Image (cartoon, rainbow, N blue to C red; front, side, top):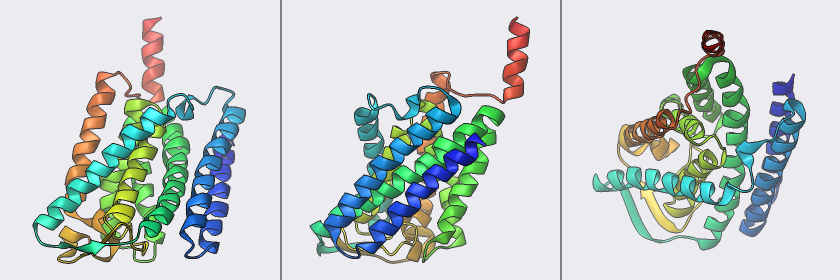
Length: 275
C-alpha cells in the first residue's frame, strides 16, 4: 500500500498544479509562479509521504545536495538537446528567424519545472525505486522506460514513434542518472534542462505539447525521422543516438561507484553465502 499512497500523493499534486497552470491561460508570470510552486510542493509532499510510509530519511531529495545536483543535471539536459538541434540545423531543418519572446520563455520555465519535477518523482522516485528494490536495475529500467514513453502518448500531437524514442532514450537516461547518483535532483535537472532548452530556448515542440514561443523565433522542417515532426526533436533519431550516449555514461558511472543493484533474490543469496 505504500506505493499506492506515494503514487496518489504525487499524482494529486501534479493534477492540481497542472490545472492551476492551465487556468491562468497565457499569463507568463502566473504560469512561472504556479509552476515553481507546484514543483516545490510536489517535492515536499513526496518527502513527507515516503518518510511516513517507509519510515526512513528521504535522502534522494535532500535539500543539502539539491543546488549542485540540479545544476549538473540541467547542464547535461541542455547540452543533450543542443547537440540534437545542432545536428538538425546542420542538415538545414532548423531555421532561426530572429528573437522570440522572453516572457514566453519565463512562462515555459515554470511549466517545465512543474512537469519535470512531478514526472521524475512519479517515474523515478516511486516506480523505478520500488521496482529496482525487488527486481534490480534492468527489472526497473525496462518497464519504467516503456511506461514513460507511453505516458507521452497522452499529449495533443503524440505519435507512436515519438513515444518509442522517449522509451528508448529519455527513460533509460533518466533512470540511469538516478542509479549513478542515488538522488532525484540530477534526473530532475536533466529532464528540466532538456524540456526548457527545447521550448524556452530553441522554441521547438516538446513531446507534441504545442508549446509556445521561447527566446528564439525558430521553426523545424524536414523528415520526421530527423526533425521529429509535430512531436518535436524528441522524436528525432539524433535524440535516440545522444540518449544512448548519456545512458551509457551514467551506467558506467553507476558501475564504477558500485551503485548497480541486483535482484532481491540475488542479494539474499549473496548475503547468505557471505554468512
